[in-house]
Image (cartoon, rainbow, N blue to C red):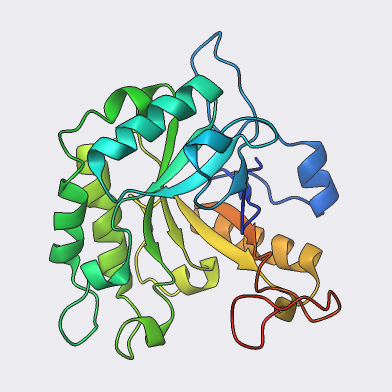
Length: 247
């Protein structure tokens, strides 16, 4: 399966899929990433992070959006449904809302952020595929994000389980490489997919996709492969990215 979201373009394999022999094979055999009700137009989700509602439509068929306000999210989902766009929703929005005073991850604060959406009526959008996924956390593997320690793997699974307790059919994503998730001393159950974001420093893109697909399959997880088009280059473009020293 293939998704695409940019500053990230996304390739996704379902749980149990055989890893592609190459990126070309993955693209050639791609099918719609989400099953929609009969008669609903389907497409491969493709588009940028934070795509505005008024840009829904060709060439974009997907987007990751932040859930700053639950009522505004319903407006976005309605617009996405009309345009046949699939939304992956970040309900926590930013780390400052889900950390303790010392900067470490706080699962209970994270749950409180998710609870804002508990009774706003997301279920119809989950059922028809408009709301295609729940973006649980961003870069839990990076100690610099969490006061020197990565987010505990058990907390990631607990967050996914909490999401499933509210929306059982909503796919759960975490943006981290499957190699980080492979360190878990348990099998992932509530978490559905890892999210590997490519940048030029990671080497050959085909090998990168294949390696991450193999690890995800071994873990029983789906995989999203992203491309950082703003800060992921090696300098040949001559165009500086937003990040210091990035291209």
